[in-house]
Amino acid sequence: MRILKLIRDNYYDKNSSISINPLTLKFSDKEIEKSYHTEQLESNTLIIVVGIIFTTIIFIAFAFTDQLVFPDRYLEAFEIRGYGILIIILSSLLLYMSHSEQSVEIAGFMVSLTIGVTVISIITFGIDNKNGFIYLSSVNIVLAGILTIYGAVNYKVAFVICMFMILLSFYAVVNQIDHTPLLIFIMQFISTIFIVGSGSYVISLLRRKFFLEQLFNKRLLEKVHSLNRELKEESITDPLTKLYNRRHFNNIFSTHLNSAIRKSKFISFIMIDVDNFKKYNDHYGHIQGDSVLIEVSKVLNSFTNKNTSSFRLGGEEFAILYVDSDFNSSLKLSEDILNRIRDKRIEHILNENFGIITVSMGLITIRPKGEDRCTDKIVSEADELLYKAKNSGRNRFNYKYIE
Image (cartoon, rainbow, N blue to C red; front, side):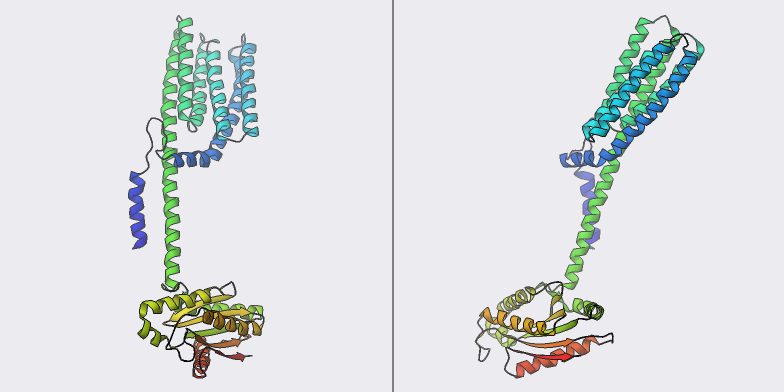
């Protein structure tokens, strides 16, 4: 239910808090706008690189066909395309030397503008003949492709380039107004430009919407994973002491046992019980009793590491699972726990002979060699050792080693 609520709440958040300005195509959230540019850098670079390669191939191909269509002005056309190739090479060097958002923008601008100016420059060559007109009309298709590629990166700059080329086109018409084919070509050219501008806008808008959708899904997935981790922690953690609960103890005991078998190490189980805790609760109250349990858990938790796990089994009963290569270390651990709790000097006037909070413990250490040993049996044996310690005067531990 909590996950469903999270999805529902984030759905409304998705549809209300973040918007895209239809004119500038920018996100309302500045951090998301910055994140968009950062994440799109690689894809934008790839788009411009593809555009540069495509442009270079087209320029070289058209350089050969220029000679067939404009034999009398071939060298002039070749010179114009040569300048275009030079600018494209400079754009490539810019991308290679400075892999940044600004260099991608500039390179795309240079390539797109070069194509447009080249087209405008060459449309006056041989426009009077039928073959030249058909040839130059096909250039519109190439121009549309290149500008659409760049428009996907920055539609606003692409639009500026389109308007610039439209002005150049009108200039060509004014200077050659008697050339009807040229006027037809210019109108066709302008139509292509507006189609490209619209296409670039739509592509840019769709890219941003797709990014926003991905961002929403990513954040939602992160929250779901975080909630799952919290739910898992809650399911294995005692809410009062924040130690592992009995359920988790039952689940991981076999894991610790198998680890000890693989590594040929000892595994120790310590059962811990607060002495005369019922009397403490009756005399000091349950709130103070909970405080005692929390203090005891802090002591146990201070010994927790990759080899040691602490648990609250229920009530005033605690436990520790300990894996080590030295049997004597478990004896020292038990002694340290006794001393640490006693040193807290928590008043308990009904704990005879001591007057402070103490604990009794039962320690059982085994060196498993592959045989199955029942968890319940180990717990039962440790419990017997615990009550022997209580019957022997409390504030102590009894231990047993099983080979």
